[in-house]
Image (tube, rainbow, N blue to C red):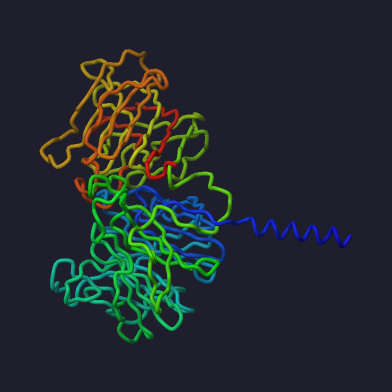
Length: 560
């Protein structure tokens, strides 16, 4: 009996030893438009929240138990009364959230640009429900962070220069309030922590994205600096008392890619806006935004969430120690299992719309107040009601978005639709912003059914409608299923349609992908594939049925 018990104990110990093993995670850990990451740990669980700008629901939340396998568990702002995005430009809306946990409650602090400023929401369960926002009018600025140190809380944020007088373009400050987290209000007087940045004599720009930590004997203030573009960086300050000035680390920045060879293979750029977390094994990690460009500084996938190890050296945290370049993979001790849905590396996503609710990975453009989409009436189909609103306006169009999370790959769908007139269009779009998109769709020309490819106006403000850059007559019966595919290859996009599955016909090849880049379109977002339908301002009762949607990534850097 004792021998049997001993054997069982040995087997249990062996299982525990082998339940985790050293493997690698893939950067970005959240690929596609997932910028401004903030992370917190609660015992054995990790949570990340990201900016979402004018997309709804707002502030996607991710969960992991091992920093390798991430799953989206919902959104912090998923009710219209929580989030008003009406009239917001694509790169306005929600900026730079911070997520923290204290004494049984989760907190997210964020900025709603143009609509009310800084606010805080809370939840007992990060899956929700989250509270309605409590507004913080005293906190004037952006990128607020709530940080708990012992039983005290502080809010740090980007704000105006002293006396609102800029010494140079990009002159900003970091300021702080003590915070009564039980009553959700600031305490006492605002305090100026950083003026300008690491060295104001060198005119540092856009000190922002601050987080406050207490590690050992020091308070650390970590911030982004240099602007959220190619010169982006992360810098660190410390002090032994919040009543004393913060001192800049002499070897700042602790993270940047701006000094590297621009011609290097598979570059990662614009790194910064970081947050730190200590894992259950005592190791430290940083999550931060970065970009994967092509042809120099063009990128369509937006700012993504990366992760790298952190090493403490002489009392200072160093991100990505021992390497100049941020790597596409780092070793980590994690569970052998893999997530049901992948958010990194090359993956295949397929949705047959058999669930009674849309997958959380989808987003809408601005707040949804009238439910124009339906996955319940007809299992196996997503039904969209054509609305007069278009993607070029500042309202909520009939548009279901999925992030383009790869430089190379494709998105495809199948629809059943009969356009009543030339105003009605339904199909598949790749969308960067209101005037920067390509849209392959079914419509009508001269009374006959056609496939069209439309291109956004770009900077041509005199144009009233998107330009039709390609079209082809359809000879299938009205209402018969038609297939669309958009294929991305870095700086080129190709557009296909089919009347039979996989019998693809090329409508337009190698259309300029730079048109969809942040460099051309501006703003802070990334491209979205979208199932989109519109009546272009006309009243209608038309609907379109999307019978499936799929997206495959095929980036070379992840191929083995």
